[in-house]
Length: 44
Image 1 (tube, one colour):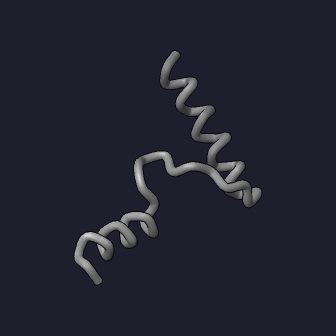
Image 2 (cartoon, rainbow, N blue to C red):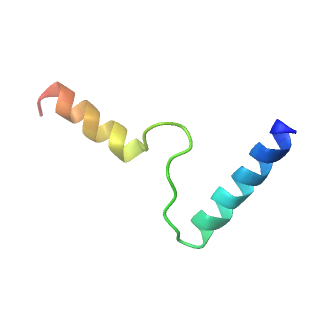
């Protein structure tokens, strides 16, 4: 049953993204956030 719920959650996330609705990242930071954090840590 868990796999079924995850599947539909993924579908909703995909469709919202296709419609231009901002969605939170599924797996941690976005690439832009990761880049900003690495630049901040390096002192640039």
